[in-house]
Length: 168
Image 1 (cartoon, rainbow, N blue to C red):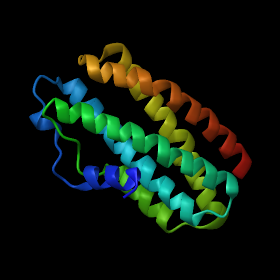
Image 2 (image 1 turned 90 degrees about the horizontal axis):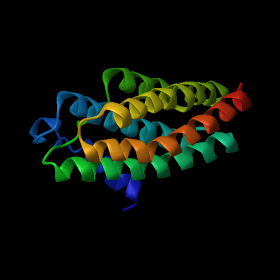
Image 3 (image 1 turned 90 degrees about the vertical axis):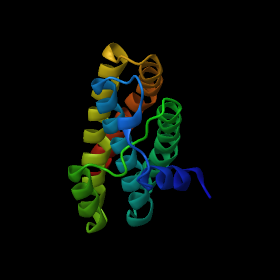
């Protein structure tokens, strides 16, 4: 089984909840939830893009997102599991709506929606989330994760902006 399938299976399994994480503050638990849900959304949406888009640029970006976000998701699972906590079992309601919209979109409409919402908007939100955690998180391991993850996510955002311009 490929890493991305293992990560998705682990995250979708429902056995994970930050409630059991000993010593984590409410802020760190909120970070874990948002980061995990964002990572799940990124992987699921990018897997859709790999199959639904006909644009080679979109497909290449999506493949990179699946690979990079699957690795980050796995790292977050490891950190949280070591602390006795678990991740949320699914994406947020808003993210589920976006995934549903992507599933029913095709062609240029799909490419534009994916580039706008998953590429640019989601990465802007993730950069902000990671900056906040890296500066003011309470758990050293989560702060280090946020700091390590920030550089590649900023690079993803730059790539997403280029992709967004290309598909519009």
